[in-house]
Length: 296
Image (spheres, rainbow, N blue to C red):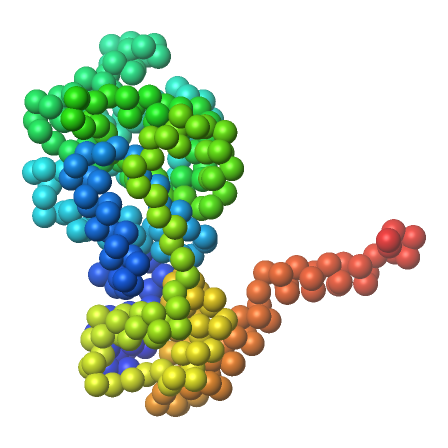
């Protein structure tokens, strides 16, 4: 039997996969989604979602895809998961493949013309809204960003023919600071922040209820949630991982609730097996067995 069924749940509540059904919408996230929806419907072009590692950028992108799934006759979505392209031609060829565009020539001009024709056909002749999602946007190089800027030049008198949402870590800002023409085209930008203590509690409860827990029942004590918040610093990915391990530990210890002692145990285990801790151990062990003359 799956561990979550032992807890009276129907599904895994703290999976580390970006399942949009379990995406907790804080008030700030609701505001973000509202602005993004307006931007897409009004065809305003470029949008930028920033956030540190583990703040929910990928899950937000999946949520948006699900949110618009009922309007497939109106929207055409394309997704790039990791935009590492070594040359401008690599990026152009990938876009052609993604959009399903074939060209008679591999020249730069022919490829750009193929993309332009596609956007005009879908956006004007078929009245569709073409949207490009780019995850891990911090991996975009200057050449790829310049291509995106050029694609944003394809427009009518009223709107852009390509809508772009880039989800990126904060390090992308350093690249964009040197591309003023790109920054000027950003219609909406938003930075995902860590959750507050109350939002952390609401997120945990939301995911448990989504997994089948009765709203009247609790699996985490208040003190446990405070510890989870303190250790995770409000980052959703850390919260999810810690809650999953806490439920497993609770079952092993034959407890009915995740309390402060369970969280302390899980945190100690995570710290003991953290990459930094292991690396330090390896270095100290290696030093211990080095010949004396090779030691620093």
